[in-house]
Image 1: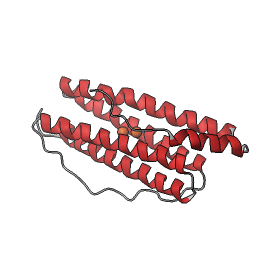
Image 2 (image 1 turned 30 degrees about the vertical axis):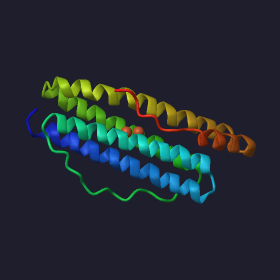
Image 3 (image 1 turned 60 degrees about the vertical axis):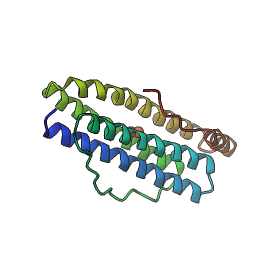
Length: 168
Ligand SMILES: [Fe+2]
Ligand SMILES: [Fe+2]
């Protein structure tokens, strides 16, 4: 793979994954501030997943004899008005990320860079999971809006989420 548009776009995507980790870490901090430790744990695990995604691209660039180039991260949003608000932002963030992967896949297809096309397939599948995860939680939160018992049960459920790096 030559230096150029595709390598630049992979670097940009790696940095966006680090930024995603930053966004979710800020959401975790917001939840902790609201004494919702289960929700905070959910976002801490999400941040670890995003860091794992970034490192996957970092390793791919190295394996393909390219430099991973780290950029400054934009400031994430630190304030939300509710859990629903946070999850709606998370969902929108994932939808934006899916678009970025489609754009990357288009570039890889244009350059007939088959190794990259296959590499990106994992992320495109992952985005289907990510969008489903957040849209399901949004639906749940809307359903239990006025039911504080159900809300705290969800918080307790999220306390049990843990990060397991997916098998290669
Ligand atoms: Fe990601
Ligand atoms: Fe994600």
